[in-house]
Image (cartoon, rainbow, N blue to C red; front, side, top):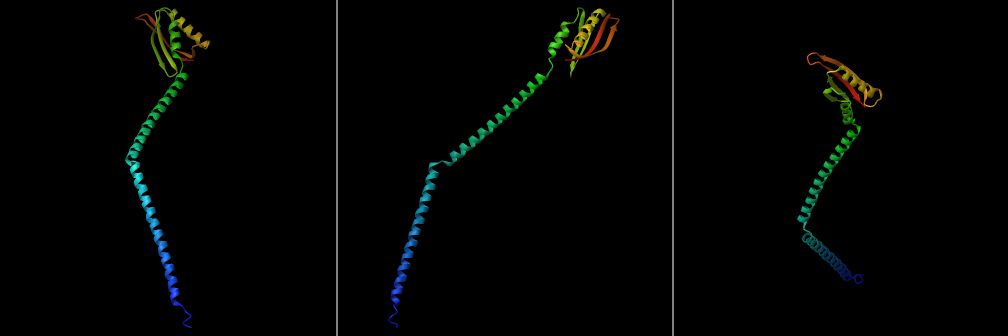
Length: 178
């Protein structure tokens, strides 16, 4: 019975499969070494062909330029906003130049303006003359402009003063222009 058992054949078969396994592992190891070498060579090539400090310097320059551009854009937007606000104010503002010119051109002969003050929405006018008739003509002119809604929306006579020394009369008006 022991003649029927062949122990040598089984050892030989085992040895052949182990040698085959070792050859496969060697091939895999060589392939891994080759792939690692290829990757190392590729990384070395990329480092040599693409200068990293130059790219970093370029990135810093671009970032700085963008920052300066943003500051300029912000300044321009601020200027545009202020101009828009000024334009709105100018459009809403009453045209006092024409009102003042009309008042001065309507002064009768012998009447002079002593003071002319502009405040928020109001005009204070002090006129004087040696004649009450000339003062009366200016009052009539002012009342006509008020009634016709041409120059004033309100008109208040704050006082009439007579100065005996200089023989002059002064009229103090407060008006709200249209």
